[in-house]
Length: 215
Image (cartoon, rainbow, N blue to C red; front, side, top):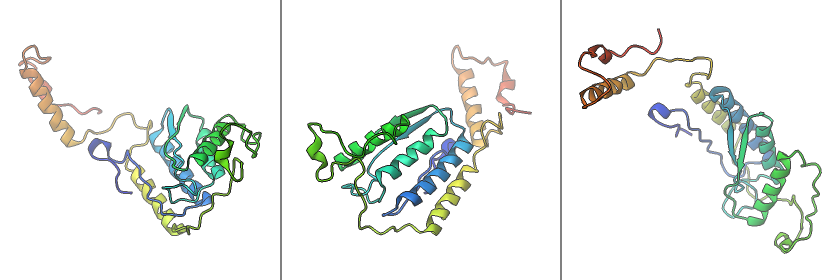
């Protein structure tokens, strides 16, 4: 949770350490809160959404309890933001459920999720979906949900506090430059001046006094 980036990139990275067994409702609640906060503070002009499916229940490596509909609900929520959206695949280690998930989420993105049948059509691959041959099998596992409401709320609050360290974009056009950056910039000016053919001449001593970016 505290891997938030470093130096100029600090607070531009977000990690949410969820515990095993999280279900649809709890996952969606924190997903929605975090994504809304991210959009508020970052003000993105486009979104790249990677739809890894190892968070589905019954995944060979994953330890979550999401259903395909629950997973798709998150995709739908991002779609409703109205931003240009590039959707990618990702992980997932029970292949038949990955196929189901991405088929369903393709329908979600096309606003067709209510029109596709739960019964899978015949194809050369139909036996991979034995024994139910459906789009939405029961993926519930025996894992208990180790995430409490208090834990989820603490995660949400911490992420929100981290994002508050950023200046809301685009409300502020200019900011004070950190002192360590000014020192680096001064050195770059001196190095550039001393190079043959450099951009700055000896007469431009005033350039060594870096002016604030805003007054």
